[in-house]
Image (cartoon, rainbow, N blue to C red; front, side):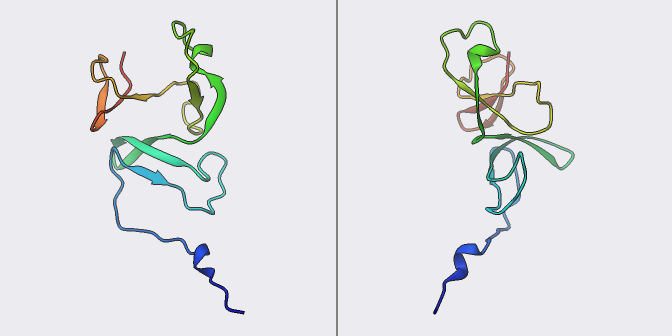
Length: 111
């Protein structure tokens, strides 16, 4: 029997992490927060990166934690073990005061 085991092979690359890039976890990474995760890198400090997990949706809605969003059905996502009581967000509204541009038409935070 000739089995093709290439489907189990993990392929890596030489692309360096940078703000605005996406990291995809290795398929077999067994970690509570980062297993099977897709992370959008938003900040770099001293050769260390901060990113937001894009694919770990929770049952909590934005309207449940922020006043003024009563009609919003936007879900929140769980991003990891660091600062679990802080709400980080990305958006496409360039007019938000204090927002930082991450990539073309993508911003982080703001007032």
